[in-house]
Image 1 (cartoon, rainbow, N blue to C red):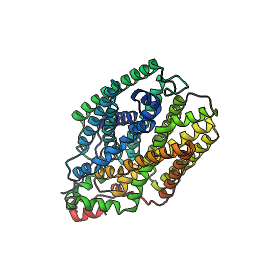
Image 2: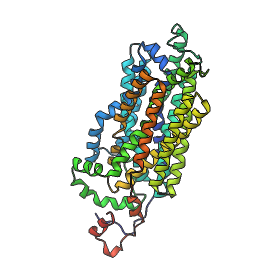
Image 3: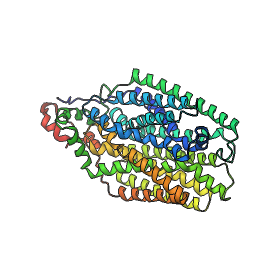
Image 4: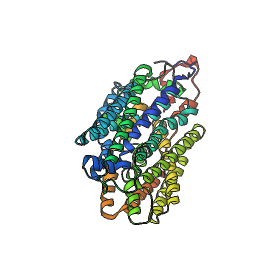
Length: 469
């Protein structure tokens, strides 16, 4: 395929509208994921189950991606699953998730529907979490890629803030519903509140699904950068490599492998707080160290984490628009994450609320700043490989890491209490800081965009291909 020497990049205003819809989708997905741990008393009382079973209302979110990841990657490799199909499948799964969650509250024998809903949400999650770097690199110029990744990603943590605070507004008692199970009116009040909340999310999911089905395309008619235009000439070459060979090429790259591991740990590190924060706060209340509404303060702490995440994401995205020093940015973010995670454990040990709030803010800031940098590293470092294929592989460790951290955390909590869980979390944050120091990302796509196009009279595919090396 010949490249037009007079190629002029073109930008489309609708990219911002699609980006807004992706951000809202991420927000809804996070609400469906985050709120169970904050009202786990209600689920224990309403469904007559244990706290460990309620944990699986969150952890099941990580199970379905383990089953469907390889088939999706295979379809992407065969070019039968483009960006439009990714977002349509994601929002359809999101709609089914909220439908299951809403119907499950009709009867206290339908907890299985909660699990089914979270399996659908897991499918939506693995697809939506691959979109920030895909959409940014396919539709935005290099000086807007960081901002586009940030705006897309920030929806997750706006959703976390909503999911951890809004459901707790239905609670106003300091005591546990489990220990005050005669309060049937209270159970009914929370049940109605959650049905209304899930129904609103269901309607929003349906609107977004319809929007994607009508307006989204896989790629823009004209690429936004020279690098995207040049990449098209390697299409035939890419098709000669099989699925296994292409995947091996990725995972034999030390930087990409470390990026995948870091992405999994960084994203899932807060899982322990999602599923246990209210119980941790109740431990302080029961030991007379604090006099608070445990559910509400647990929600507030996670909301502060989400605010820190939003700030960290937006700041980092803007910095990356003009500063492409990925190694420095990622190391600063990982060290900040470790320091703040350790400070949170110390704040809990001494029951110091200001320390808990401040450290959780910076934990959200650092960990999600690192997440944004990893999104950019994945597609920059592996250019000119297919962004959809690369970004989907980036999420490969999300499921296993989420289940591992959640289950080991529950064992530690039951055996040794909350502090052991927070120490475990700090160890993982330290491991991230060490691994981040070992990466060596290359801005390959940026370097290609900065190269001069050959003169029109020397159009030669072999020469053009050498630009991509």
